Image (tube, rainbow, N blue to C red; front, side):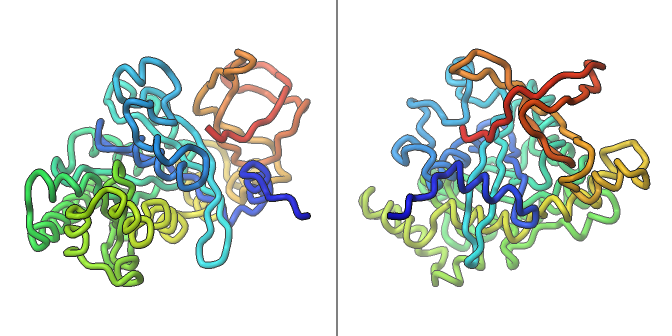
Length: 350
């Protein structure tokens, strides 16, 4: 009898194929739904109970500290890895859920160094807010490519009672506002290239709290219209959940978008390394960085220090840009100016 592959063994298998890796994050103004968004992706990947996804009373999965549950917001950037299948091929999505509050902007900046693409969430009612602009600036400064998710669409329907035509007009305005920000902030080479487009699916909309999302290509694939979205709010809860799972599952729409519109490390490091690293890209080390060379010198950037719940020890989380890390190897910590040994390497699953 063939044993079923575990989530961990699948991630260990997929991590060796760089073209199928996506290093991404969530970015948004505070309370625009990033952590509920992440929770529902994890639930679909089988990493948490679906009934607890986005549940404020239970505490979001990526909330690591008691103060996060007390404040109902993310304080630290939390890292998770998920496997996803797209058009018959498996991909590894490494996702960081970042804080939205301006007081924790340093955590966002460190997270941006570890990723190549970001889902920028904006509330369908509130639109672009000051911290939305701040996190977009942080992303573009690091040459992190954005895609757009318009969240809390249920509020347009249930609270503001907008018509389908008014909803579409609202989306057009939000997309234009977002693209205008990109045109103002991005470097000349990326102003047009990184604008989002509803037609190609680099824009999605939905409700992270209610676990649904749609993009225009997905709507065409499922033969779903804006009017169908209104109908689900006339259904009983169980019927609505069934319709959502069959026609507008958040995880499938969002992770498809990551695979299709956000770059893999081999693509991204070619244009990101010259921006974020001040060394000589023509040196052997520089070439290893640009090429994402697993046989090159180790370059690992620490983005977060996590306390392991079982041992109480500190664990350094971050991104490996080149080389291979293994247990017992000697490394040099630049900031500490000293050598250390790797005691144990981990894949972060929660």
